[in-house]
Image (tube, rainbow, N blue to C red; front, top):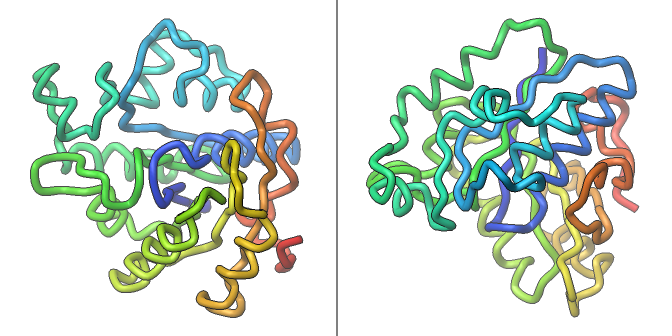
Amino acid sequence: MNQYFITASGTDVGKTLVTTALCWQLRQQGKKVTALKPVATGFSVQDEYSDSALILKSCGLTPTPSMIETITPWRYAAYLTPSMAAPQERDQVNFAELVNFCKSHIGLDSDAVLVEGVGGIMAPLTENRTVLDWMKQLRWPAILVGGTYLGSISHTLSSYEVLKAYNVPVRAIVVSESEKSTVPMNDTVVALQGFVNPDMPIVKIPRIPVKDEMWQHVPLISWLISHEQHREAR
């Protein structure tokens, strides 16, 4: 079984798009996928386009409240970092339980387990724990998602260097085109290639609106999970 952590250089750069695309593409290949979004902020159970709802739909599941609770135990209405949202709802993330929740899905009848983080790699989960701490505990290969907005190259490279410094393996970098971006995607990829390991896959995803079945419009990226022969970003 393969386990991966989908993280990002910041908020709203495309983590859920990557997660749902991987789920759908692997399922099209006959693979069994377990996908989790353990922590979510800005959450509303009525939101049919919440990260959790979209992930469930991409797995062929109906996003009922009970199903959402199954993959997202920590849900906060406030659109803040978990550490800031939790005091308002008196339900702080228990870091040990969070790590164990993810690990408990290893060994299930799945070909891949995907965990989507929350915010960027340094987003605070508690008063003294970040998403990076979460990733350090799991030690699962990371898929790092970055954007193409002005400044995204610096944010993506900073995230990449931090993950390297803490020995979190990076499987690939995904460049997801930002809304109303003024920076060409190809230029972003070329710039990143000059600063990362030569064998690091960098893949591109054009701008795709958040909607039902958005994952069906994403170029093939499932080879990142199935470890097929390396394909250069185009």
